[in-house]
Image (tube, rainbow, N blue to C red; front, side, top):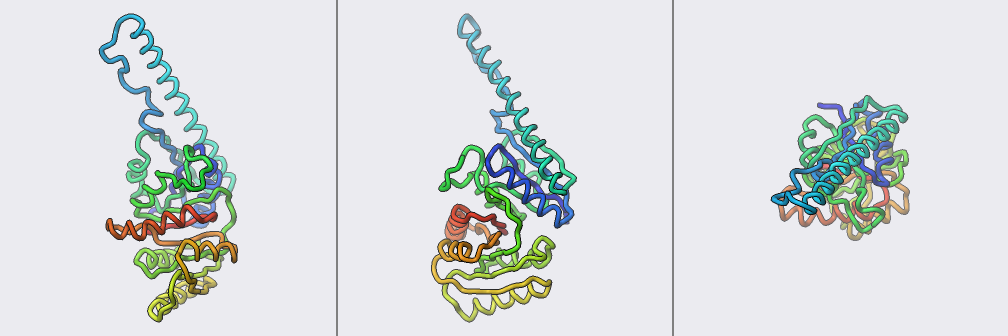
Length: 284
C-alpha cells in the first residue's frame, strides 16, 4: 500500500485547516505528503495567439497589449500558486509531519488528482474553494467531483482545525459503510478515539445485528465504541447528535456508483457535507 497523503490547497479560508488535518493524518500514518495547487488552463498560461487575423493599426496594438497583460497575469498566478504551496508546506512541517512535496500543476483539478491517485492513500480537501467565499449553501464543485470519482478516502476539512477524539459514524450497513468500518479497524488514524455508530431511521433486528458486528470489530482493535438509533432523516438526526454530543469527525459512505443510486445516496451525502460544521471522512 502506498503511504502518501494528497492535500489540495488554494487561497481559501479552509487551506490552513487542510494543512493541519493533513499533518494530523500523516503523522499518525508516518506518511509523506504531496501538496497540490492546480492553476486553471487560462489562469496559468498566456494562451495562444490572441490577434487572430487582425494584424494592422490600432487593433494590432491593442491585441498586443492584451496578450502582454495575459502573460503577466499568468506569471502572477504561478507566483501565487508557489507562495500558497510554500506556506502550506511550512504549516505541515511545523506540525511535525513530512516529508512534503510541492506540486504546481495547470489544467483540470479532477484529471490531475486522477493521475496522482494510484500513488496516494487519501485526499484532504477543504469543503469550499477560494471562489465560493463564505457562502454556507455552496458546496465546492471540485469537492463534489473528487468525492464522486475518487477510489481512496476523502477527508473534507472544516474551516477550523480541532484535534479529533470523538468520531461519529453514519451507519446504514451499505457496502461503502462496511468498507469504512474495515478501514477504521485497519488504520492507526482512529486509535485513541471513541466511536459512536448511529443509524438514522427505524430500528430493526437486521440493522441492530449489523451494528453489533461493526461494534465488535472496532472494539477488537481497542476502540471505545457504542451504537444508537436516531429517528428521522439523516441530515437532521446526525446534526442533532453532533450538536448534542460534540463530535469532532463524521465518517460516512459516499455517493453510489450507479446513476440511480448516486441520485438517491448522493443527495444525502451532499446535504451532510453542506450541513455539518465538523470535518468528514467519505469512503466509496
